[in-house]
Image 1 (tube, rainbow, N blue to C red):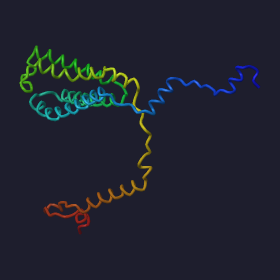
Image 2: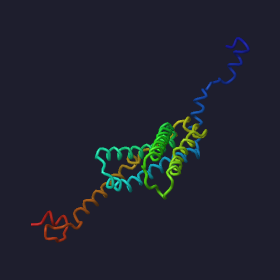
Image 3: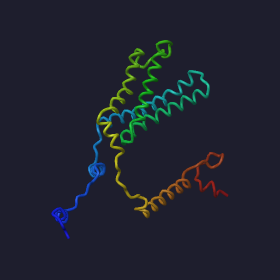
Length: 225
């Protein structure tokens, strides 16, 4: 029983519940999907495209470099490991930035690339390190063109929209049911068809029947009397 005006007011009015601001923000983020900023897309694509370019250059030039210069095996192995690490870091940092996991890796790779290009420019100025450059460009101009890649990544990663994207954390993903569990019968039938097709291809495909050079099938070779 209410014994004062305040007690009567509390009994008639709806209870007031305080919700923390962090919980409200998290709920709003979960309901409303976030839009991917243009700076994040650009920086991530630069990292991924750079990794593809490094891989293409390595595949097309590594044979020529190894055959033209007599280098020890451990040096060639270390160079290949460094290039592979560089490719993985470029692609991984770009993907991590797009996903919102962080920008530390991308910035670290960009700073390392700037230091590497600067050291190569100093060596090219002091010693004849690059006797011939692509498109016969001067070494300083080529160095400045290469520096645009890490500098561009740093500028895009330090943009306010990129900072806000990373500060909000990774994107929330909808929990989806495993398609294999949802369609177990269909997956089993598909696997059986693929296995039967491979077995039939292995048994019926033409093979060399012995040293005579005659064509036949696997079944003829296995069950030949």
